[in-house]
Image (cartoon, rainbow, N blue to C red; front, side):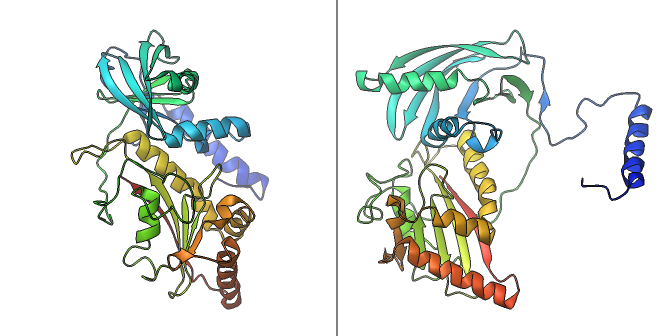
Length: 347
């Protein structure tokens, strides 16, 4: 758990661990009850209900920047809707940025539970989408990028079959909002522009018009910056510099793949948006946040800043000054007085 100050401090716990292992006669198949366990019984794996590309945050640090950007595109902006299924096999419709590309058939080879493989066949929706669908097929061939969920309680991840250990966990502190004038399947507006964001029915427009929610900041609006793009901090960053203490919100948005009032939760989307939120907790560190925010100054996205819901003349520079003033005051008082929160919008 940490470095050892002396040789004895290192030897004693290691010795205790080795003695404990030596005394263990009967192994425990699942010693940690909240963790999924590997499965070798492939006969029970049936009825796929979701598929997703794992978020790039879960990749090793050695992964190239190009691979991360490609993975980000398919993890964050693509949906795979299960069309039909037969035992472990299934077909999935591929939707990228709201456009249906076509369908991919997955024929699963479960002969080795620790190295699952699959054969793919694709059918493009139109001639124009054929090239993009082929890219989706290439991505889906990378078993270490794909995660598949089955109704039988199994998951295929990184080419391995796991049995999910279900636990009931209550979800609390929801903030219910009205999306009736917005399309929950539409994440972004037609273009990322100061004069467009807020004027259409996308979820980006909802954030610009509705954030902060009641209790999460000054109702007048405060500072709001769009940070959408590769290796973003978040889709939006909101700063209320008038409240005491000031409030910083890091907002992630994930559109739904269905607008039906009876739609269920998308497991893949939930995993992606929560991984984004967990990754971006690091930006609640004042130094990392400031450096990340400064990197957008001078870029096109740096102009997408509003103050009290109106375009900010100084753009990101003005919001950065407000943030730095808060940090300076915080350092002056030497007290933790910034209320920092990381929010996810999952429809």
